[in-house]
Length: 375
Image 1 (cartoon, one colour):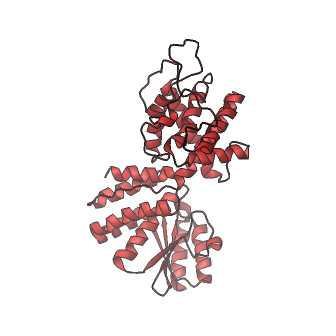
Image 2: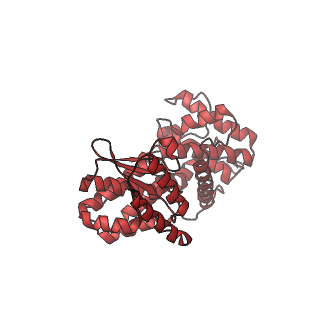
Image 3: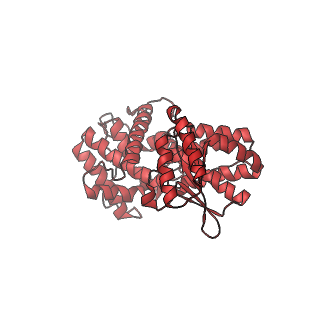
């Protein structure tokens, strides 16, 4: 968090940082639940924002977040202005956009895996060293791209309404979030990692609720590593979280297959306690598909269902099906110990691969990245 200082124009950087964090949290939470989310009703405005956030030039990508954050922090400012007119006490709409970019927006961007680029001073170049943004500026390399920025900011400034500014700013953050979703994060796995450190890291990662995303990434990584190091099967197919088996065509969350594409083991991953209904549903579909080896990973069995689940396991064995129920971390402890350090490194690497391949929400990928850095 930037230190709490105020610019002499009255732009409070600490307030700006809080506003940015609050809007980002709101946008990313809503975007995770609604893929078709939009904050700006004008389609042309949305397209201009999308093109600007994904522009090839770094300064263009940073422009809308910086200018609109300044306007949102202090509505009296002109969001087209980049500098304050020197020695003019009557100039109340000018402001130091460059400093807001370097003190607030750039550090935020770095915390978000450098969505907009790696610059720590995005306005240091010539394109933004002007008093005010105007259209059809032929000094710019990409005049149409520059005009898109001017059009968005002009629309906000002409309305000069805090609600409009907030809506357009959130649309900008939404496009940043969508850009972030396409990034591959860097996961640094240490050369050596102990069993207890690996389990502790996995446990901490699973502690935050994720709708099953984190649990499925860890389970997928563990069974990938089992196939690689123990050779029990050659491939693991994974379903998307919350997708039905009918929709994916899979027998379970994870399918472990041999070289002849024969199903060796079906794995159901539950990021909660297992219920009798879970077991009954899985046994029913497994019988239809003649699956004989079924494994559940869950946070134990619901207390009132333990006896009934045990009876179903015994009954399934008599009918030719082997059904196993494990707490994920208990299963992982045994397997990670047997596989040794090479296995543990593979497991940790595969978690990152799962998080990226299945486009898991960036905050979960960032959390895993941070945990690995702590090893």
